[in-house]
Length: 141
Image (cartoon, helix red, strand yellow):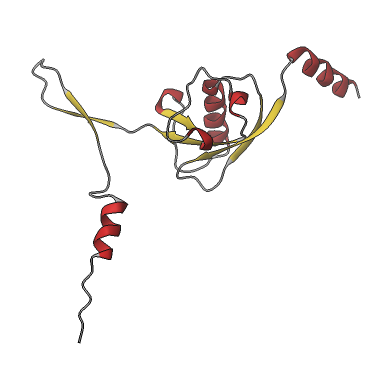
């Protein structure tokens, strides 16, 4: 009983609403759910999601550097959320956590600037595959 009074006093002092959010990690089996204050920063939520992911022993192993990840909101389109935005400012509770694309260095160690490019795992896009499959020739008899 004393504990519930203490929690109520902390909530009154905190001033912000608490939200149950769901963070889906790309490549993982299911979302991570946890409670945050609506005034928490996106960077803090990303850090909490990575720690929860590691604590649960989920696969694939991601690491703990929050600078390697971006958080997306379904209503904001394809733009990643700014780490300095408040999580409650979007009006949604479902988010997606993605790893930033890995950069591959090309060039030698001769002191010249190194060109950096983003690597791609597949050799084509799904649009190209779809268009190619539509162009199948049908022979008439």
